[in-house]
Length: 418
Image (cartoon, rainbow, N blue to C red; front, side):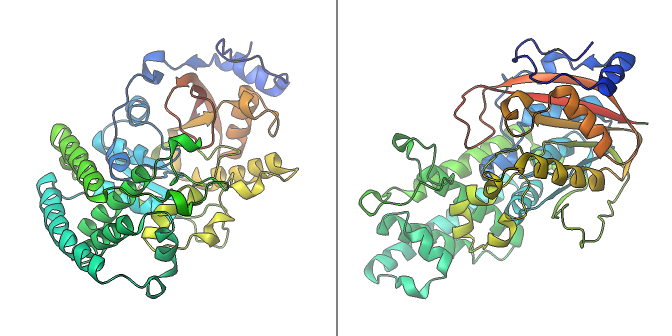
């Protein structure tokens, strides 16, 4: 007996005898399909503030948290990205904590967890908009000398028409005058998210110029001349409408939630001491072959004057590893280290839920089937774990930037600590 997945291709390697016996003895259950279906496209606060590659869908995070934890439990995501898991867990009354390698991702997560009221966001944007319109007219009459700007803003100017760039810069300058850091971060990230929407170039074969690809460069004869005020206004309206309809900002204020910047591969960093013992660890680790997220946020880093070059080399599954012969082995080694360090504080009886890539899609670099992946996870985590449930989900939502497939499948594995 092995785990069967009729919707996917047959495994290319036999399951190890060790895991074969484990699966038989434990009579592993399937997660109900209603939990994993992909019909719900509801957003979450972080995705409305700023689109982020690889985020777990809000509906999936919410249903898994509700199934494997209780009210006031402590939920932890060691690869939290922009925070969709911890945000949805917080709405359900769980205390949450997340870590991520990227400062920008952590900033998005914390901003979404601590949003001002929708009325305050609208008032702030109205003020910023009026002042930025006046400032952009001044910039038009007195051209900006690019050499006086930070290097990252000079790079950003290469992607937009001069008039559009002036308007973007005017909006940013007015946002930086907002005194409250949480309010300022909210508007800055909304503006950064607007840049990605403004940079659409579907006719070039890429979803956005803002989603990075090495062969996608700005062209002097095709610079974007568009209206950042309109796009910013659209994003603000979407966010405040969602907040009012769901009352989410009130739900998020009931519990303690936080995301911090942390590198699980850096053994020189002190071990994280979480506020509480972990009842549920739920995460979606970076996929092999995924485009590293630091590069995927190129325009955001330019706008925020953020240099992410040092972080790029450390990311699990990063682009620079693609041509290495041992890239699959290296990925597993790094993931194993991260899993062992991140599962130390899960209590006995607690759960670990992993949303993983479809193993058949990466057989060329990691020749392991679903059962072997579960064996790898259970051995990598700290302590003794029992594999209790599994499931497959067809996902029409594109969770990877570089996928050419419109429809993907993912594997969900659930463990319980003995």
